[in-house]
Length: 220
Image (cartoon, rainbow, N blue to C red; front, side, top):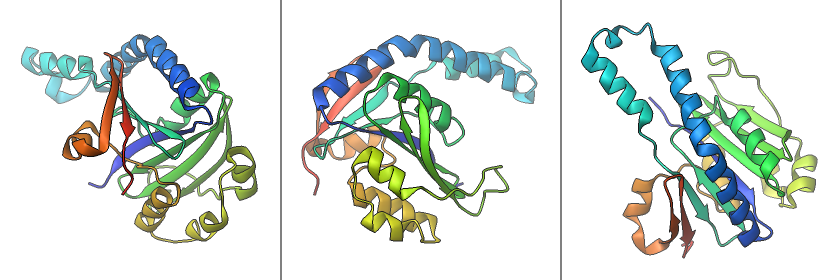
């Protein structure tokens, strides 16, 4: 099985203000989201064979109620990135739209589904501005091939797209994924275990039941 993740990268013109908006958003939405996830999980799995005894059911419910706080990373290149185990390519569109409604600045979503589909979405004020989706698994996972409108991307984000144009013409998912990460100096997939492996590069600023905020200290 390949990689499975999604993440969001907010263009933070005012880092403190964007951080404040993110904290308010996740504080307000964590409880309702957890309830929704539990309901969805029960609906999807009610007929699964492994929930045919009390022990399996207890284990299943325990997994549903376990919640890893959102991981928020403040990057010194003016991005604030958000990572969570519940994010996926399948729910990235909904999560990105909801998040961008709450923020003043654009949000870039990135996601990988089993190394078969890779996607980049640009959100702003609750709308999808443009998207890029490619991979060998498009038909298998019922995704459509999408080419990014680079002019829109540039106008909304104020980011350079000179190298992005050539990058998105590559055919290998890994090349595009790594290239996008390097181009804008953002980690597309990051976990708490990753942070623990490089303690000297990150500083914890805040921790709550809903999220933890870290600051990137060095980029090399």
